[in-house]
Length: 202
Length: 202
DNA sequence: GGTTATATGGACACAGCGTACACAGCGGTG
DNA sequence: CACCGCTGTGTACGCTGTGTCCATATAACC
Image: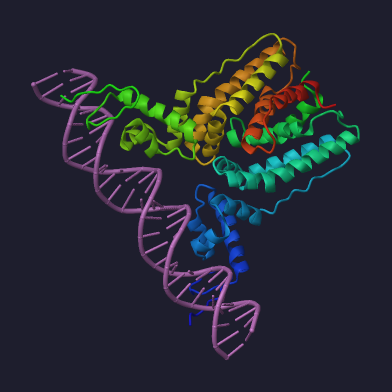
């Protein structure tokens, strides 16, 4: 009965009946990611996502347990997680390159704002916090530790260092400036972090 | 005319008219701080603060521009800012002691939860972010930089190091574990942070 | 004592969340 | 082909919290 207007650009649904579940899920995730990049977590509401995706709020409630979970899924849908870690023979260059790339990602794209707001939201949303650790920070940390471990095996670093703490002193320091922003997050800052640790302070 | 029941324990107001502004402000701040420590930022609403303080919401809106501002003020009212920085002749011991004390504050009291949630809220509340930097993180950072500068003057540290980046690699690393909590924030971790930087990684 | 500033209770509109119900179409089974 | 379960859709409801507006009462000031 209802006329359909199959419009790929703007979903613009009207009919009442069922649409393929996968399609609806995909459209919701895309809409969530786009809304996140456009407005940040502040303007990110279930209602807006539903409207933007041309779906009903009920559908979203059916598939995602919380706003945070939807936001994280949407973020991953739009921002393909480029977790590749270069691994040359030079640990100093590898760490520096990775940190500088991270600084640029955070500064030059909207990803930085989204990441910081996701972390912010995670402080009062345990489920989001768990999902973030499991799917984002955990894997990234593991890759960094792996790189450090290989450098230790090659004899480029002391064999007795605690890789995990080093990760906190490199990436954690960047997150500190991202989240608290007393001082700007610059490429020089990233280089200094590596230099401080490699050379020692005295 | 109206009988007063000066009750320090439970304000239990009834009358409608004006009360001393300072008294009301103080009661609101105390209520805000207590509510913050008890329920965290998630359950921190203007309505609850007003009810807890026996005041009207209108009064709160009149004196505080945003929820974040009220929360920060309440936090400072309850948690006296113990910003004292020991400064002996031993920079390693000073840094270690300060970091260990910070770790204990964050782990063994409710302050850690409140701090992390304030930072979280600040990610979507520019006014709160500015207030936090100005009144909390800024002064603390300045004290740490000062300590490092003195150690450099005494020749205990290289004279060309960037103190600010070192602060990010010590306290920032702790905040990283507080906010993202992939790994626990322990006393050993704090000691390792200082050790990593002082000795260098190779 | 008169004036002014301000706290109070109550009401309002608004946004967003979460839930409920009836209906509509798709996909399988018999 | 008929049927039925799953699932998306539209709509409505109650709830909480926000932000704002009154009229009123009263403390603080002159």
